Image (cartoon, rainbow, N blue to C red):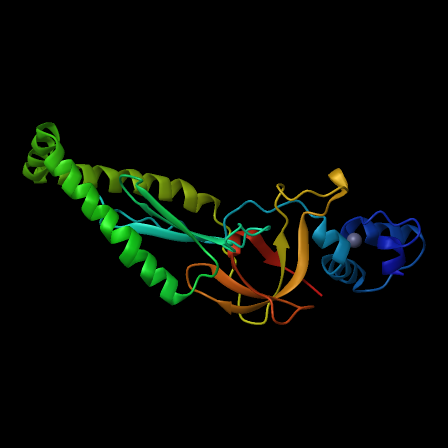
Length: 247
Ligand SMILES: [Zn+2]
C-alpha cells in the first residue's frame, strides 16, 4: 500500500510524512506506519536520482602552501577525449606550478607510469632549465630582479605567513558548510550528472545516475567506483560528486 501511495497510479512521490497522513485518511493505521513510509521513500530509486543536487562538501578543505616558485607542481590528466587526435592521442597530461601558474602539457595515446616519468624528464625539467637560463642570461633587468628576489628572504617569509593566515580564514568559512560523509568499500553510490552533459530530456533530466559500487575509498575523499553493469569499468571520482544510494 505504501508503494501504491508513493509511486502508484496517483502517486506523486510525496515524502514519508505526507504518505503516512494519506494512508491514515484512507482509513488504515498501524504502529510503525510513519517509519515504514519514511524508509520506503528513502529507498525509492526515482526520488533518489531526481533529488536536488547536494552542494555541501563532504570533506574539509585541505590547503597547501607553496613556499617558492617551481617548488610544487599540480599534475592532472585530462580524461579520454572522444574522437581521438589524428596521431591516436587521447589523453592530455598537464602540470601547473602552484605560484607562477606556469603550465606544461603534452598529449599521449595512453597514460602509464612510464609516460608520466618520460613527461617529467623530457618536458618538465628541460623547460624549467630553459626558463631559468634564458631569463638569467638574456637581460640585465631579469638578473637584477633575480638578485633582489634572492635577497628578500624576510619578505618571502612574511608573504608565506600572510598567505597561510588567509588560507586559514578560507578553511574556517569552508568547514562551516561541510556535512561529513564517509564512504566505505562496498557502499552503493549515485554519481552527480554534470550539467555540461547534453540530454534531450531538458529539465526532466535526473540529477544523479547510478548506482555504482565503491571499490576503494581513499582518505582525502577520492573514491574508485565500479559500474554494476560493467565490472571492468573502474573510475576515480571525488566524493563531492557522489551521494549514498539506498536500496
Ligand atoms: Zn519516489
